[in-house]
Length: 328
Image (tube, rainbow, N blue to C red; front, side, top):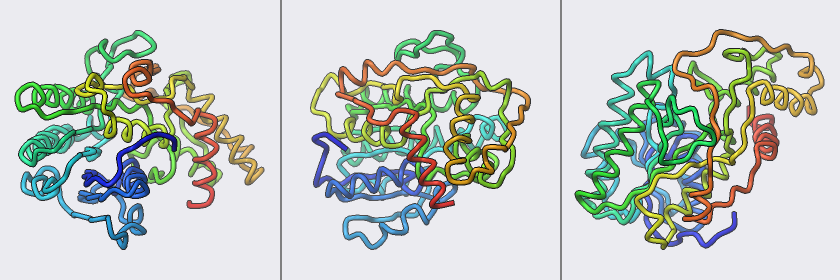
């Protein structure tokens, strides 16, 4: 990955055993940083970081962001925080809004307090494209949002409000990264709330018919993991004062329908096993809380952070399918 990124710093990654967090831990260690990983393994997986445990600059703290002392211990001596810990999934938040709120809001507030008290230089956090809610305009630009459509979306919007207040009130510098449908290596295909790409891949590999919610014409700005890593590294490394205390879209800037996605996955997987080409697609009811279309403007990130996403949806799917074929 190209760029002058931060080196020789002590960085906390919350949710560091998760899909995005574990990839961030690897990249930060490759840049010779000291990395502290805080995770309670509610959704993170030990196998994601198993190979890092013997690394001299890696430290695992098993703890929960809902416990303030765990957050304070994790922030001790840390210069930067990459806060990835959260309970994702719109359907999960609809089924269990209380736990989603406890983790995503109370836990987030605990981390802000701990970072403030530890005098952390900058607090970068995972925001969400769900914050755009019922705003219909495309592409999505950072300063135009609608009403949230799920408890999860509310929690992620509240995160942005808290981050802004902590900067204004306590001087804690923050950057929010609104992730758009991130996918790639280490993303879990299992469970009721599995993301659509790994879930579809696993179903194809088992010759099972993927089920698309709705007619398949809903579209998303699918974003490969390496683009997300680049944005986190830019956010943590930037010396541009105008780039701090902002919220940014993290995406590639192209729209793909679910029908296009599933056809591409079937085609790429059939290169490994031609029987997959014959697997049929099924359609189900539209999910509550789903927004019809999502497409990001990435102009702000390009202008203020120098963001230049290296992986298109096509390149990302190629890399992801290859990884899943070798690892599932």
